[in-house]
Image (cartoon, rainbow, N blue to C red):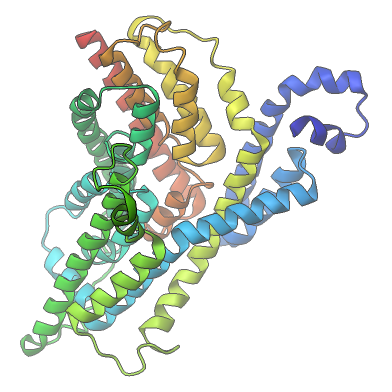
Length: 467
């Protein structure tokens, strides 16, 4: 596909020149991709250009520069946009509806007041992220937890950053998260060893993320709105709504974790229609309908015109529309990057590198990190990197049970490094933390890189100790 597109993009080149430059085409495409990212960051600085528009223009420029025809890149972009909106957009909408109901019922204000005296708002959210990281995707888990984050975090950047980094770190290191599940299965790693190594390393990743969030972002909350809790006689309604918000958030996370369990080949949920029914409960339409219905039922919230344009439905939709479109555009850019094949081709350049001893874990980590950074999907990065490592585990000295488990963990860590503009989780964290794209890159993207580096060092140390 790339060979046929290349002459079209550079018609002046002779066939001999084409064959001479083609081996480096993936490097050029990666450079064009990075230039597109820098363009988005530059034009969105200080709010001069809307990120949605900048990302759309950057994706278009990347498509043409990478040698894609108009029909090819528009088709890939449209497919990625649709997949992202279908996979994450409805979950974001469900969270927006839950937040609107919680605001109207007084739950948000009540929880803000209760959390005002906490010594740390980030630590409880980081702990929640550690458990929720095994959900089907960290982006979906973050979206579901956003209403609770707004209340407990008080709108401060630090709690949002801590939650996002915790979800990211745990998702790459804990079974049954799909990323770790895929890498462990493909490498035939022992799951008990993967868990034995993965749990303490995941805790380390969460602590690193928490420390980075404290150093990089402000923990000062936005002033709480106490209008819904003005007197003691009315506290029972906000209390009930707050309880409803907590219960619904826990329930939706449980559904996302159940969806992860369904990906296990041994089918712990059972097979057939029962399994399909349980998996369906974790899909976006079910999360939207079940979450909103439970929130209304448990909180017993009644609002005149609530289902209309001026009620909680209209407010939630207005608040979520821009973010959903932005996530869709980011998905379109990610799909375009996947269609070029540059991520796989550039990762393959590393296959001739054979570090010795415990440093052999550098290779699976680097393969997954290159894949993740260039094409955006952590799961695709983990699957592809694990496939590349299948035949290399033994030559690299990682063929024993401990080596395979640690290699799977290295792939999982690399598959979460680096989250940036082509990742829906990045935009969710950026909006929740009230950060510009450039500020989010300097905090969240850099945070995932720091987490990955520390985790890799810990895995190498484990290999030295238990080889």
